[in-house]
Length: 154
Image 1 (cartoon, rainbow, N blue to C red):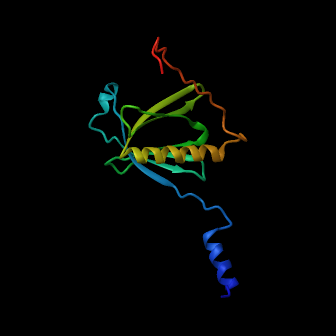
Image 2: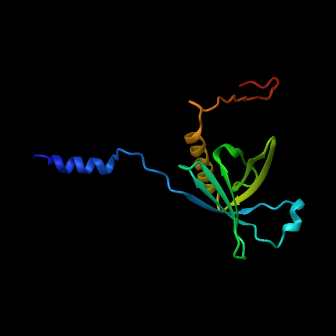
């Protein structure tokens, strides 16, 4: 049984592309988490779209409104300081943005599901790693503590 070289090379070029594929812009429908301090905003639309452009290194936060005007802010990868996953509400995520010199702003968003929140976090991590000027990610230290169980034997 002989193999056809042209078929195999064509097949392998489709299975193993030589160029890395670019990641398309991903959009996530979220709601802004409203605290008691934001009671003045109740009644206004709290729906947002978070669009992650991994290749461009940007996060666009678009506020949806019933009016024709839309309000959006674009944050570059270096302006996204921290992601804070809520332990109580599994589909909630806090994002800390750098606004001005030595000032930051935190916004809490509610995703449709925990799975979508995790996908969003992974895309942001990928974006930050791709555009980072560091050779390797920062080192982190992990502390694991135990309780003194007294005279309990194992």
